[in-house]
Image (tube, rainbow, N blue to C red; front, side):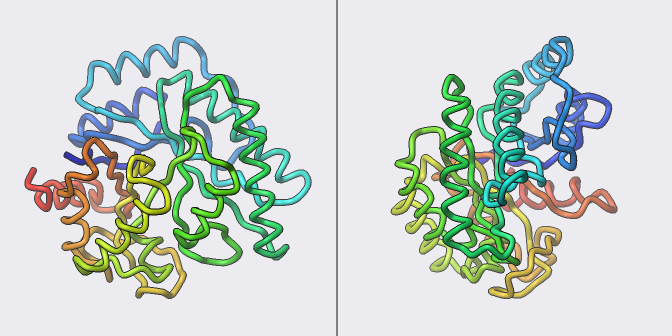
Length: 280
């Protein structure tokens, strides 16, 4: 079955995310391995990684996924791109130290330089990162984006073009975000629309490359290209789409992570809804 979980804070230590996930009954969790709003971070002390691994091994959490820093922009120019390559390489090393196999990454934003320029920078940036970390097994999951601003990767076709340009290896996969797909114009609410998306994902990438789902309802209507997450079932997507995903046997052992609002015990409520939709 799918692995339901949430993005959780590492405040107080990396192992605290495991403890928080266990308290919520998560089967999978997503974390930042460092402050997501800072370029640099001190190396993870050996004692901290050992404590994280011990807590994880003693928990019922099956998988941990990391999310890359929001500062990383491989489509950026000059200094930003250079810093992004270094930061992403470092985050992959941190994941390896923690036993995390997948890192979710926003492909990048061209910042007005044009899609072709941004696309080329993302490809060469990923090639540089993969070369710098060739001894690692950690996979980069390129996330489907909402189409807001100058972002790269708001369509499955754009991500497929990245895969083709990279002559992709086993170290690149994808993360499918329900809110992003919906506001980018994909009809995910109906059974037919959902099946069309799955068929295209299989055609372009192969289902085995889907390393994670982000399950977020949307405050915005389909196709508006504005990324505003809402509680499960309380937005424009509705419960049925999420029920299809979490109960779909094609996503066996795939983390299905909520990034929904946290207020008023949001995680507790949203995880409970997903479990009911899956049939516990």
